[in-house]
Image (cartoon, rainbow, N blue to C red; front, side, top):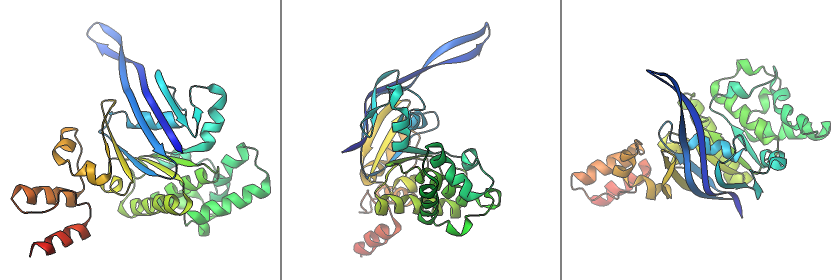
Length: 285
């Protein structure tokens, strides 16, 4: 069954620009007839340069914005129907780039409880959800801590726990590691992978880190509001020149394989990991 299905998804907005003659309004096409299907339990990555429309797509999944044209269904719910907004947001939770923007309380456990409380969940069930969510992201020992004393990676895992306590089927993560150091990035990605593989939660990751996208089941590339590439990480990243055309990089080891192939060395073009590169080099002997 599909967790997210977009058909002809189009979004336009009006932007005010300054000109020599004053201010003028300009229509901007942020998404242009996107067709995207995300199966339940999958992990997909969405790539694109800044301003490509990838974050706008993410906001549609949580019904933060509505399509200008076309339709997007989340867990079978049409986001165009106002009366279904709560069902949609319970189905798909959202984690943003800056975890500080999602923290609302002065104690970790109170922050995690905020969402379920607003849903009217009974106190005993809230306690259970808070404990389970913190355990799932490896933060149980920080239950009574102040969020201000946590590292960036811990804050982001806490934000994920806050979403988990709402019991969503899907989590949309809009560049969740962009403000983190390498240690924090690793913590968050390990959490995302574990939730997907062990809990079966659908993960939709908006990112500009290619090594993160390489961990996904499927990759979508959006360029100026258009869906321009779709495939497995190996299929997408093996097209090095096409990715560069869209202003994107590929994982470092894939770039090395690309350069070696240009030198006439018989290395597979779809290498994604150091282990694969070592194996390929060993086979050359």
